[in-house]
Image (cartoon, rainbow, N blue to C red):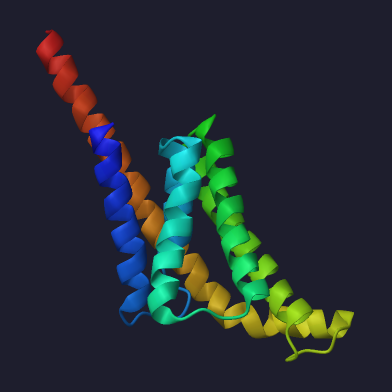
Length: 173
């Protein structure tokens, strides 16, 4: 339990600091934290982590439209759900697929919310498509950030588990 607390604190700090320091737009670890939580932590902790990191950093960065914030936060909660589903059959391919699905989901939900709740685009099918088209440059960073941070977080956890397995196997001999 003690290790889980440290992991949670470190992930929240990673999420908060990454949003506060200069970074390419949408290249942040929040989705990776959500995926990691779903894969390795209790459901309760998995849902709390990304919300806490987002809320604490939003206090500093600034709050914005509650409808847009809701879309962003719900997207991360859905990514936790993807992680929980992937946890049942955790393979490299499933983690990669889950990460890609989370990136696409975030893109669709948040750009749909910009269209639906904002005034930048006509409230028509054409306006929705324009919102998605204009979001593509941000999607590239979302995808790269999600792949990078998920790779680092999940890769680190799997490397630690492999190391512990090898140490245990040597001690059993």
